[in-house]
Image 1 (tube, helix red, strand yellow):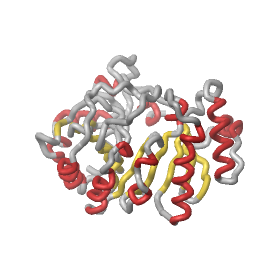
Image 2 (tube, one colour; image 1 turned 180 degrees about the vertical axis):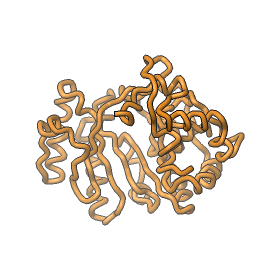
Image 3 (cartoon, one colour; image 1 turned 120 degrees about the horizontal axis):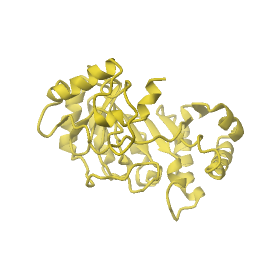
Length: 289
């Protein structure tokens, strides 16, 4: 069993309350370094890439570089996903740490929060990071995420402001109307700096309607590990509804080979969602078109 990446939630604290994220039900928690290192060691046979995120923002951590040191020490790469609000809290030495393969910045975090910051105050550190990457010749990717092209009317003003700012910053013509019309997956702004587009999605919940069977990438392309140490099959199961096991109690090999995990995996291979949460998840429709 190999995974394209594994999501390891080094903190479940994001410092914000975005309307497109679910309400956090679990207590705030940071994964301690010793436990994180033990997890990285167990992940080495399974993946080469660790996304330091499930719902928390890794940039809220003052010792983020120590987690990246551990990832680098074991020859793996890191993905950082952030709202962008805490960029100034981290040095460029940390953000461009040799372990970091990619930084994802969710730009919709700005217009989906009540904040005292102006748009310019929010976007300036984002653009400064992009400039620093180019000036330093860093090889890491920066993905500027815009996940609201399905909200043509309600978020048009924000998108107009954003597109205008990025057009000016990168000296390129970004056509908002064309993006609404053609719905590109991404637009290249500079070398390894991309705007990445997608639509908002409904988070899986036991309170959702039943969507039925289908396959999924959970347990196939990835798994996730919550800050508590609970192993879950999918990066969207942020409350650990489908707990496959706890790494504070069992080894990863044992957890992934247990009957619950294997039943899920076999079900997905046959296009069947065996867990109730999976039955009530519409995100899997993306893999069943």
